[in-house]
Length: 231
Image 1 (cartoon, rainbow, N blue to C red):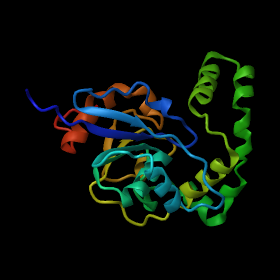
Image 2 (image 1 turned 180 degrees about the vertical axis):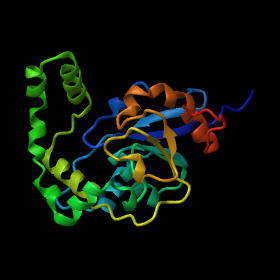
Image 3 (image 1 turned 90 degrees about the horizontal axis):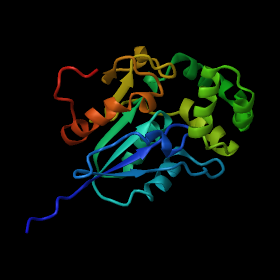
């Protein structure tokens, strides 16, 4: 009788205010991988990013795992990785260090303008869907309602603050960065050393999931894409 193959455990962290349903179309071969989905927890009052990451690590129940984070979730998994032994660290639609933040975010950090963002307005997403006019706006409102479900104001204030003030002067070695060339939140002109997804936007984990289903297994197992055509 042959020995059962040991599965690779892959943990997914969603983007800011999003829940794990953003990964609903991501499929990895079940004979090689076991998928796990992390969810945002509410930060303690004035909690540091380091402390938050250590609390998130308690939800990682296996050794030598793969961590995958989207957008601000990509920042979180980089912080989590500081105290974990990983097989692979992958970020999507995110940044690897402070230099990759767009100028507007760095300006907001230096001036304190990020404090003026009215995070309580996110409570009105449900109302926005009801009054939306036009197919495109209705679809966008439905997306917001479905995927952006973390509306706790303490969390939102904390997340925005820690995104724009993230103190990471140098990118971590060995990290795999997947980024869309049409990302409107983190423009690719500020991004270096990434795997570029042509026409990929900031929400490409939702609308380009076929790309991820095709290439994530290679990236996890080999750390690279073997094929020349990565579109």
